[in-house]
Length: 268
Image (cartoon, rainbow, N blue to C red; front, side, top):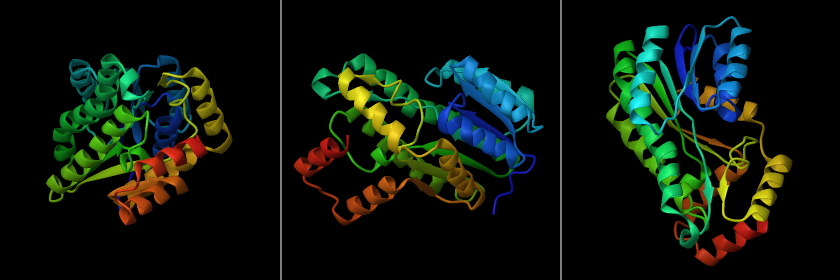
C-alpha cells in the first residue's frame, strides 16, 4: 500500500472538477501539490484550499499541449518542491461533432491536450519519479476509452489512446516501483460538457442538463482515484455506467452500431 504522507504530487487540470477535488484530497492525505491549468483564477482557488490544509502548494499556468511549456513546467516543479512522487495527467477537453463536420483544427486541439498532454506529463516527469525510487502516474482516460460512440470520434480516439499508452507504460515500469493507473470515469459533474466544442448548441444544452441532474460529484471520483493510488490499482473505473460499459464490451466486443447509436440517443 502506498503512503502519501509528505509526498509531492503534480496535478494538471487542477482549476476545477476532478483535478481540483483530487488535489485537495491528496493534500488531506499529506501531499504537497504542484498545480497546473490555463485557468489562473480557478488555480488560485484550488491553491487556497490546499494552503488551508497546511500543505505547500505551487501554481503554474500551463497549456499541456505545448511541449516547451511542459518542459519548463517540470523544471519549475523541481525548483519549487525538489522532487515528485505522483503525477496526475488530468487536463482534458471534448469535441462533439460527426466527423463530416469536425474540423481538423479541433481534432488537432483535442489530441494535443488529451493525448500529447498525457505523453508529455509521463515522459518529462518520469526521470524524477525514477530518482525518487517510487511513484505513481495517474492518466485520465474515460468510459469512452472502452466504446466508440457517434459524434465522439476525436474524444474516443484520445481516450482509447490514453488507455493503451497507460497499459504499455505500466508493463515497462513494473520493475521500477512506479505504478501507472488508467482512470475511466463516466458522468462526473465537471466543466467538460459546458466547455465542449459542439456542433449542435441545442444538444449541448441537453448534455449539460443531463450532467447537472445525474452526474457524480467530483469529490466522490477523487476518493476513488486516491484509493486506487494507495492500493496500487492498474485501473480505476468510476460510476456505474463505466463499469457497465466495460462489462458489456468484454462480453459483446462487436456490439451492433445501430444498437450503440440507439442507446446514445436514448440516454443523451
